[in-house]
Length: 303
Image (cartoon, rainbow, N blue to C red; front, side):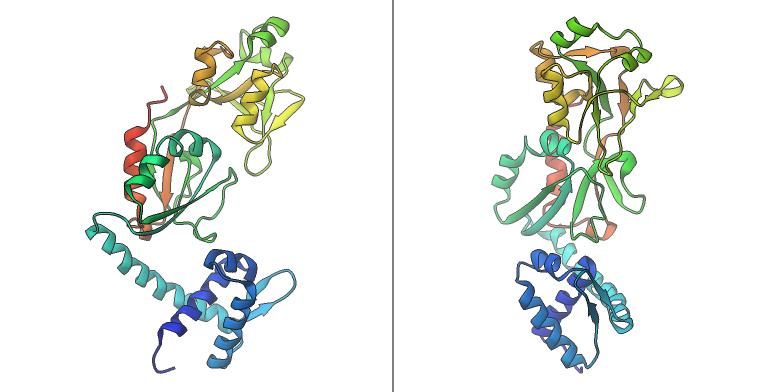
């Protein structure tokens, strides 16, 4: 192929989306087209190139040897193109384009919900796509520009920017529950209580981290109710199901109104801050710098 036209470059972008997703359906969703359109594009591309690029089965899509080699070379080329486009953001007063984020529920509630109105109003030419899920994913492979996670869980090959100070994790219970079961006086007392257990993103049960430094304890607490999101955990505590473990910021109102009571306050745990993270080559992604600045300006020190 002596030269590329716009259509051929677009077809190669389709090929790279399929390689990233290993799925015609997921690639079609990312690109906003139908799976039949992608199939048609790939047939035409393979015909023009005279080489089969993909093996497609009912369960998965895998590149051929030729497809793998082409994808490796194209990844470098598209990264260079993206870097060139990203530099334009440094010279643009207002971001234009699309910003795709993957964040956990706590970050969506504490960091993004308070500033969404201001942010979207300030940058009307920016499309913000927000996916909320607690499971840790590969943001690059899944097509996101950036993510938010707790500092300790951010992959080491990513750039991380702190959005909060250190976070305070506490134990809470309703007055009714404490009146019925008594108030724990030390960590081992929790083993005789009903606790609201938490599932992590990988579906394992979280061991509560109590205290800090050399005195820190990790307890696999007992309980007959478990949940994977903070809202459900807090609601269970409000209804007297048991003692719950959560970020102090998530229950400030409930504590102030007396609907929840902090348990074992001397054993609160100070943990890693929430961080925005992204590949180094995406540092100029449209709107990312402005979003980080606005979150940091609006974030209340959790302590």
